Length: 481
Image (cartoon, rainbow, N blue to C red; front, side):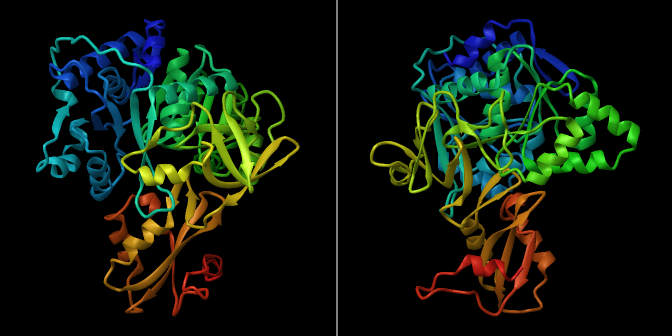
């Protein structure tokens, strides 16, 4: 049995989730996940690591479905609700998903992708009067989840974690950040990423705490929920903090003071998924009285390094190794070892082998230094990874798509420093026709890839700067902007 299910049984009638203006107890979550698991099993004894993709808005049904997949012995494959069809199709095909679970809200998006495939479709709205099945028993080495991450290759890789990996990631954070059953957190993060699914939802529910979902995100709604005085933990990416700061600054003085008084009573506020600009950290401290706790992690490792819960949180630093996580620097590169480290890249043994050193340490690709026991990130060992709004984006993937446009001869995609987004995706274009409509190009791209990957700025150039080997020099490309 997955550890999180075992923990939930001890919390019984306590509220675990608030979503869609309703509270749900741990017992209700266990009951609903058992019902969905019974449907997924469909008279089988065990899904035996079958991949089950699911497309559901954040909330009670999302968590119940994810738990159901685990309880039935399957591997959970969350589909991003904002991805365009080609990106969704890639995940469904790459995982070899055998079942897709969704709500009717996403029927028009998903059905065309699977209608010609031998994939079983489960609509949550159709599940009524379900006879509960006996659920399988399995070890913690069972593969539990596949999350997709864009690395330096042009296509995203599926990161496979086991129940043991997930438990190690969650237990490490509960220890480091002092989670208890008295906590109440708001979730505003996407749930196809480790930040939302592990740091927020799984840590809270493992602890017997409350997760309150806000979907879709709006600064006004977030502050309205805060105003009720129940929330005491908050986690977000720098882009969200930037939006909250902008909204707060638009308010009158009385309202600002009210919000500041409420925020000052929080227990913990965390920022991650992208480097936190010092300016945002300082502004948020003025607003909330909190020094944001900045941490470092990846899809492959969960969280690995964190500023301390008690102690000096240093601006510009990611902190010190978390409990149960071994960290070393090799030629400046951060390398990680421990039970928190992922199992493998899905059906990609070559990439898996390349990701680890000969003595079994995961190579993050991030370069850092240690200064007075605190780690400070210097940057990527590859300029082809752009960190924007909490996402790690492959420039190569965007370039490949751009080059398929009939009017583009060549291109180079780079990340530009930006206070709100961390980095802004920008593209330098060599075009066949200089009258190209850049707005139309942007719209075209949004049909091909998620909005967060599409360039925010374009520049048209006669030539791209290249070295003697014919490789584009990206630091020179940035000068165009």
